Amino acid sequence: QVQLVESGGGLVQAGGSLRLSCAASGGTFSMYFMGWFRQAPGKEREFVAAISGNRYNTYYADSVKGRFTISRDNAKNTVYLQMNILKPDDTAVYYCAANIRWSRLTLTNDGGYWGQGTQVTVSS
Picture 1 (cartoon, rainbow, N blue to C red):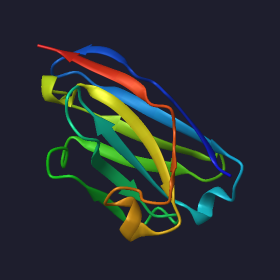
Picture 2 (picture 1 turned 180 degrees about the vertical axis):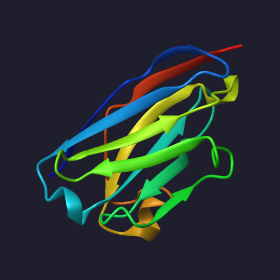
Picture 3 (picture 1 turned 135 degrees about the vertical axis):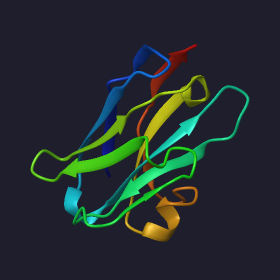
């Protein structure tokens, strides 16, 4: 059983930056593909970014490509999401996700693990 705890959310003005962190426990961290999803009010949860266990492969939603960067530190069992040039449309609850299968993680994280979420609000 993997536990995921996010931190780093908050209120920021448009054009600003935030870095989210997700600390994992209860499993062999490097074996898991890690990712971030988000859910805005009234909308379905959507994929944001993913990173492979060896950090060599990353994948982003088109809406955040060039602005967000996912990274991980396997020694600290932590995955990060650096968010730059934030827009009001980025306002959402951001969830950390873990899965043993890349194909599942980058779609809906079917069969994977979730954190409790952290709120990100971008004001215009």
